[in-house]
Amino acid sequence: MANPPAPPERPRLFANTETRIRTLAVMGANPAGFRDVYHYMLRSSWTVALGWAALGFLLINASYGTAYFLTGGINGAHDWFDCFFFSVETSGTIGYGNMFPDGRSAELLMTGEAFTALVYSAMITGLCFAKFARPTSRVLWSKICVVSDRDGVPTLMFRVANERRNHVVEANVRVAVIRMEVTQEGEKLRRVVDLPLLRQSTPSFVLSWTVMHPLNEQSPLFGITQDGLRKIDAEIVVTLTGLDETLMQTIHSRTSYLPEEVIYAARFEDILSSLPDGRRAIDYRKFHGHQPAKLSWDRLGAQAPSEATQPPARA
Image (cartoon, rainbow, N blue to C red):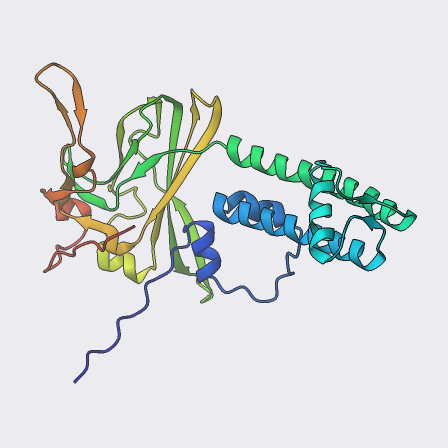
């Protein structure tokens, strides 16, 4: 007998824009049309953005080339391709001299194309500069959260690292859990609850940072195991902001953790060490690694599960 198909992967509410657009069905919203073209081009890859820019360039020149061909008046042009390349020369202000407008209609078209090319060049130049100058971060998040005792208190922990190794000044981390709740009236709603941290900010974020949330009686996650996180449809969302000293601009990064990515009775492997010559070393090969650790289930207010759950791989 064939095995039943695996259930589809739960979409992340805190996924990146492309994933969220692909996994979120929106009905009844007003179509964006051309209002969000600039926003789309900014978030697209360079390949996609330059591809659309090249397509627009070809369409503009093909349109004017067709107009030149239909109206005539281009001295030295013998077919449509000659008119198309004359349009390219006009938009690029090349002017080799073999072809030139000869007639009022062609001159009017040339004037319109000169203005169109000027505006289009300015728009593409601004877009390229905006994409190139856009502040970005190289922040590495651990693929899992771990829960184990820290100074005798059950603590939720995850790691974050600055892969650029420069200073991110006044870095701040905010953690919250998005969970499903039912009101007294029986209405289902999704609530965002902040998780207080042992240390929410650091003067300078250079290497790595283990963010910790104590699971005491004041914690919204007190008494909740991995199965409990699944029942309330929880997602732990994290944001980091700071001032990049090189760019002198604010950067940000974000991630989220599903219940399957929260590992109980485990801690992260050590990644910091010292070399024989006195230099510090950080081993990113162990960044996502974890190992068994002590967890006081009674202090967590929960009962230990019978089997440990392994985290799925994350890209």
